[in-house]
Amino acid sequence: MNDLEFILSELKAISEPGYLNKMAHFGIDISKAYGIRVPHIRKLGKQIGKNHELSLLLWGTGFHEARLLATFIGDFKQVTEAQINAWTNDFSSWDICDQACGNLFVKTPYFKSKVLEFTQADPEFVKRTGFVLMAEAAVHLKKETDETFLSFLPIIEREAYDNRNFVKKAMNWALRQIGKRNALLHGHAIETAYNILAQNNKKANWVALDALRELNSDGVLAKINKTKA
Image (tube, rainbow, N blue to C red; front, side):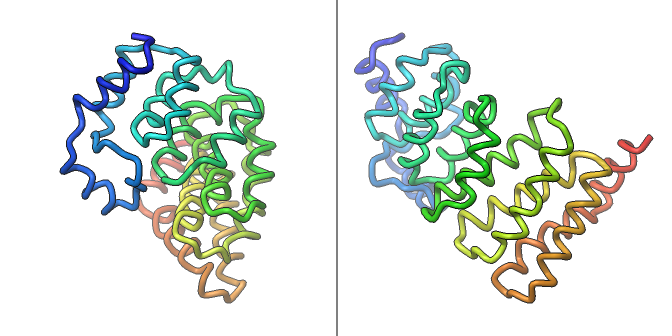
């Protein structure tokens, strides 16, 4: 299953045009979409297997679900910095951004430099990418040092004023995931949240308050206490 036209025909065959309304409801760009549920795309991706060349071809079609499939079958070992830049500049939906970051970008040697670069960018989805990389790293990169995540917290504090929906939600996600990683980072994430509140910027408050709600929850505190043992 490595023929582009065949794969596109397979995507069309599992499409549900009525599902487009639900996608739009969740803030997904449906200007070039078939209407396919993600589990169905993921299943097709497993049938295809890793195929980086096909991944690049699928991305080039511009179709929403083809690009999601591209993130599932791409090989992170073959992802170049140029590819990260090109795909990030193409992002127009949060779900593709998040899947590309979690499935591919965060596993590359470029992820830390891209965090620094993209979190200073102006376009909403480029900036979101920087913070999603933080969150995905906190969840998936078990061997990454605490110093990496400690270096990310001042960036969240600095950019917390950005009240654009897809940016602030990614910042909040990053702050929460960093804080849930271990006891040391939990304390620093809480401190970061209070530093954000101290800015007296109403636009920044949600990022901090929502993070504090989860970081101070019984479930998270129980997990953090286990990391102290």
